[in-house]
Length: 247
Image (tube, rainbow, N blue to C red):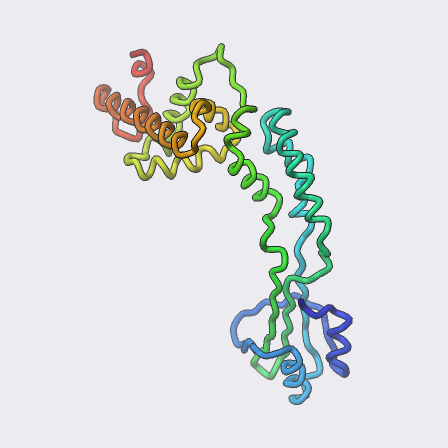
């Protein structure tokens, strides 16, 4: 654990510690020895001023707020499902002491050379910041959450809507091989507006079957698109003309 400010002042009795913004650039030496050795080095070389900077984790970045939860969920059922997780996540975050520093940097000037000492304590790194944490939770619970995604069957069938969304995206149209389409689909389902298309494989229980069927469907849509490109003399990657959709 990093030494706190009051204890640092006691350890460096006779030295002046000045809070400041430390930017490590050129002409510096990083001392990789115990803190006591660094302070002794300064004292023995008549360096009386040491600049110090404490860095802390920002608690506000780790708390899953109501606003964030609402923005990342599509409907009330999904919100309630995620809210239970968020309450537990926030309870864990509230147990931590955010006055505990994550890094301490010291710097002192030895003529034209700066002597730097640092200690890092990644005590919160096993937790993600709130925005990433909720995205991870949603991705890990896609199967359960797929039950809550809705769509308007009167507008179009889900498969037609899925095809339309894919073909309207040039990133998909330029995914000319299976590997690139697999990467595209990984990104595709990170968009909460696309989660409803997981209903296409709702009946499958095993994740590998879900992935297999979706990938087969995506490849079939792409092959149809490519054939239409040839038929209408369109370069692969470009949008199809309106008449192609009338076939």
